[in-house]
Length: 145
View 1 (spheres, one colour):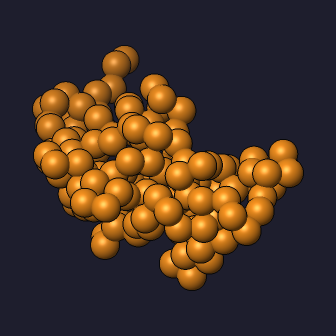
View 2 (tube, rainbow, N blue to C red):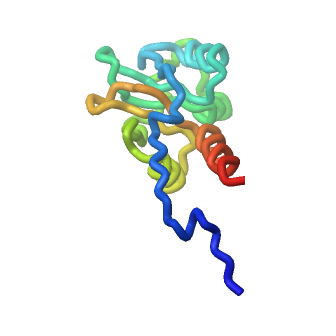
View 3 (cartoon, rainbow, N blue to C red):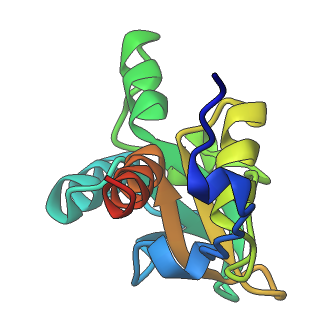
């Protein structure tokens, strides 16, 4: 005997968009800021990553907790160290009208835990983290339980 779950049989499409679950406002820092300022911002805002912007407010990089740990582990930490020197340049991004499914797939394919959400001019709008996706999956699951 084969049992079908109604939601699958009907093949409903749920159009959860990135904009529906992203964290706002975007947590950004200028590329010339010190690494200590980056760490303080992450601590104060209770976030695991910070988007690095240029003079025009466009995204140029991302710094994650892993970047800070690596910087300390290799003995590179100094008062003169800037965000630009440890950031990951040209981070993987997503647009706010993309599907949450696309964000999940992109994060898995590129093995990243933070995905900056940007507009068409590459200006930060928000961030999606692996935790945000987990929360979205949990919410979706609760709807059908």
